[in-house]
Image (cartoon, rainbow, N blue to C red; front, side, top):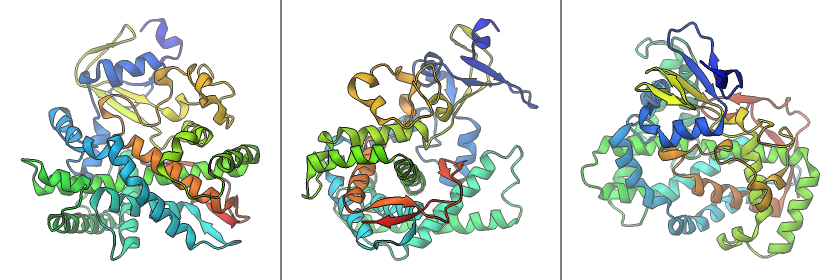
Length: 408
């Protein structure tokens, strides 16, 4: 290897395995792997482990099948459809916050998990009522924890061994499979537009693939947004000057009137807070790729099967690209300032054909929830809250959860 490795743009990782592994820190190297030379890479081990949970969903498929699945799902995330989802988000968030009381302590991360799950179920699957939403939420949570342990374990135990973790995962997957099947059966009797309705009308899509896509969206479509919202409110609680400036914007733009989807275009600082929260605590904190052929990156040659790691968490804190990189500064995403950030130095939703298909939906949902909550309350850390630590699971979460006090 030549000088590029010594500069830290591509760092070799020592490993007991024979497979060479590297961390990519340079935006151009990241662009080559995720965009311009993406056909030379596959998701590899992370996909194989995720497949045990979500089957052949959009997160785990490769090549032509992934392209077909993504193309079939894109209409559900067009701008017009996202605008149609906004009233559902507003309604569900309003119901959630109506139940809160001044002065009470709440596990905020749980509230966000339940809220975003409810939104996903209604917007993408047309399900307005759940018989037991907490049961589904528990199944999703247990599945995520199980998958994370297997993903980061050097030698995961075979699933047929009847350990407590394997048995609980089997039970959780049974809940998710049954839930997905019931959505398919219910949707076949309805005529309302939804992602599931659209997929049902696709030719050649088998029921198991539909079920896999539903489970994929249940797991990936709400947990990431809920975690990001938790980090956002933690950051706001630690930076009252940011919250004060934000409330000035909300008062100036909205006053006392109800929020609408159209208001988001005028809430620039709201968007900057969201973007800066994603910079410091990106839910997709690690992106893995495996070379399926020999390939050159930044002019260096790498052999087939080499593993490449892109860590948005560390990339977003690189002082080469972000001034005062550890500081919570939403203003860095104001129009002019944002132009100085290299295109592939900020990757909250990934990049290329495997970028998050629901990124615009997630941002719309999160910002509406942020504003609706801020119009009613402010949140401060509960006295009993443990020191905040980041926990790198399937997505980046707050270890032990987030407990906050609700104040009008």
